[in-house]
Amino acid sequence: MGAPLPVGVVALDPVLEAGTRSTLLACPELEVCEPEDARVVVLTVDRLGPDELDTVRLTRAHLHRPAVVLVAGVLAPGDVLHALAAGARGLLLRREADASRLGEAVLAAARDDCTLPLDLLEQVLDSTGPAPPASGGWAGNALTDRERSVLRLVADGHETAEIAQRLAYSQRTVTTVVHDITQRFRLRNRAHAVAYALRAGLL
Image (cartoon, rainbow, N blue to C red; front, side, top):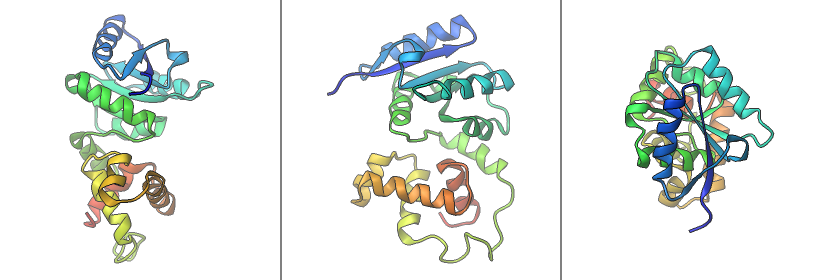
């Protein structure tokens, strides 16, 4: 095992900060440090509003550009897309953010993977509008077999390394496939790509 991953905690409420620190300290793969020294920052909030989104952006804009995992007490409709657009690389509801799930989300963010539980993915589905018409970019064979295989595993919650192992690809290939899809169809991120593919009936 390598050195623990440095992770910082940011919260607008000191009680939330203390609770998040305690949870992270139970993860041996992680080392809690000051946010300015962290590779990943966990931002814990009650609700997601303009101030919280600004905090995500400001954290991402730091010199070392740490990944951000957002833990929220509640998420209103549309919050997931707002958080992803602001730069969050993982989202969890606070009631589900035990040491195991939070640790997995932090490690995934450090690998530039996006963690989004299936119930939160439904919010993305509800927020992306109607599926593209059959004549649009997702029609027929717009996705190759390889792209479909990768997106199916992304939709199932697998991370880049797991997808690479299952499909016998390199991690770079998996990352390239996802990047190509999001760029080609002008999607925000991998969660948005999965949402559109599901709405179009391709997964």
